[in-house]
Structure formats: C-alpha cells, structure tokens
Amino acid sequence: MIKQSGWKFKKYFFLAVLAGMLVFQAAALGGKNIPPDQVKIATPEYSPELSEFTPKLGRYVYRVSWQGIPAGTVDLDLKRNGDDYQITASARSAKAIDYVYKLRYRTEAVISAQTLMPKRSVAVTNENARKKKIELEFFKNGEIQSVYINHHGKRKSIKFDPGNFTLDPFSTAFLALSMDWKVGDQRQFDTYNGRNRYLIELTAFDQVDLTLNGMVRKAIVISPNITKLTEEETKKLRNARIYISMDNSREILKISSDLFFGTVDTDMVSFVPEKAKISGGGPGSGTSTNISEPPAKQ
Image (cartoon, rainbow, N blue to C red; front, side, top):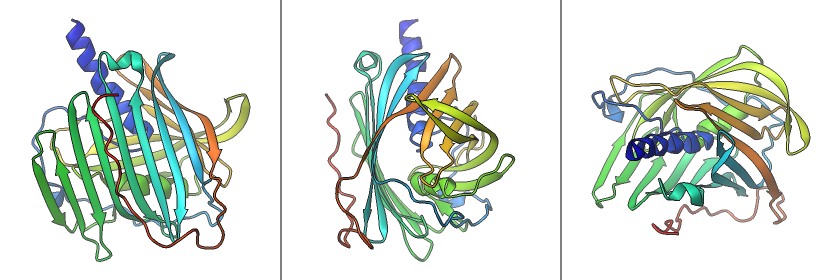
C-alpha cells in the first residue's frame, strides 16, 4: 500500500511541478506511440500581441504545496542577452518528499526577445537515481532537432519538419503571456518538449483580484487543456488554473492543479530583480545553453 501510494504521489507531483513551470510533461497512460514527425495537426500562427509586454528580468521563486503541505520549490531566472531571452528553470522536491520521490530538474532555454520563438534548450532530470537529458534546437528553416539520452545512456536523435507552427514549452509560455487576454478567449499551441508533442489549449475564463504575499494583484485566470499528440490513447491534464498578472510584466502568480487526491498549488513567493544594468540590446551578443547537470544525490 505504501509503495502504491508513493508511486501515485511521484507521478502526480512530477506532473504538477513541471506543469507549474509550463514544461508540460503530461503523463498519459497506455496507448500506441506516434513519432513526433508523424503528428498531423494545424494550429494558428501567433505573434506577440502586447507591444508593452515587458517581462521583469531577475529570479522568480515559487513554492509548491500539496493540500497545504510543502512539496517542493521552483526557481526561474530570466535574463536578456542581446536579442534573446535566456531562461534557467529548476525544480526540486522538498526534503520530506525526497524519502518517497526525489526530483531534481534543471533546464536552460534561449528564445528570441522580439518574436518569442524558440532557439535551443537543454534539460536534465534526476528522478531518484535515474538521470535523463534532452537537447532541443529549432532552425530558421522550420526544422527541429532533438537528442534524448535516457538513464541507461542510450541516445536517440531525430530531426524533422513538423509542418506546423510548433514551439517549445518556454516559447509557448512567453507567447501566451504576451497575448491580450480577455475572458472567453481561447488559443491553441503545438508544443514539442524534445520527446513528445502536445496540443496546449488555453482558455481565459475569469478575472480576479488575487492576494499574494500580502499584496492584491489583478489577474486573468487561464484554464489549460493539454492533449498528448504522440499517443493514440491519451489522458488529459485534470482541471488547472493559471493566474497571470494583468500589468505589462504578465507574471505567473499562481497555478493550481487538481489531482486524483487533492490540489497542488504553485505560488510565487518572491522576485529578485536582476542587478546587472541593461541598456539597449543587452550585455553582450553570445548565448550558451551549456548547463551543469544536477547531482543525483543532494
């Protein structure tokens, strides 16, 4: 019984944390796999709508809790480098959770600061003693190349033209944030994370005053519907709500995900502005996605 409960918590905690980071590792059960280059779908081609969209540069810290119990943390660092945004995100389970399921996740991504289109990313995941790595690159001609290395060290590479407007998880998130949302609006994104493609359908269904860390923020509430396109039979993400600030920074203030047993909340608890002085196009012109892999034991 303990093993079964631990497996369930592991699965849904992992889903909730990564969904909270908008990495969309939706967990489907069963079904026949479909190669990502064989997916047939047509979604709209979007571009940033808000000319005043100015995401704040610095570190965002989120607390993940399950039914009020601390479950983990998510950190996201946003920097400007020339014409690009550099995004570093990490997630880790809390010490008390490590006894059941230990998660250490880190990714670095580069997207265009003008178009918010993806360029490249590297992600490393340590689940207990299992380490996985994904390298992802988007080319100007529309082709995508990904390299996946599993916990046995086996390497799988694929390069393909999706034949559709396809983004990575972070460009999906930033492009969605740049939209001029009004209650009732719905948008669809074809999202590839280096292993699977997902249809991300976002619907704005409410506008609220959200009290967070003692401050009242006006927020638009988005409901995500996530379908895994690389499986014939798939289970969708249960009900979730994403709270986005309505100012020009469009911060993700809170995410609530309903699971089979209770709710996982991801709340922004702090923001530390970037100290480096940035003017014009930003400090420097080069970008790098070389990251230090998180240790298997911490």
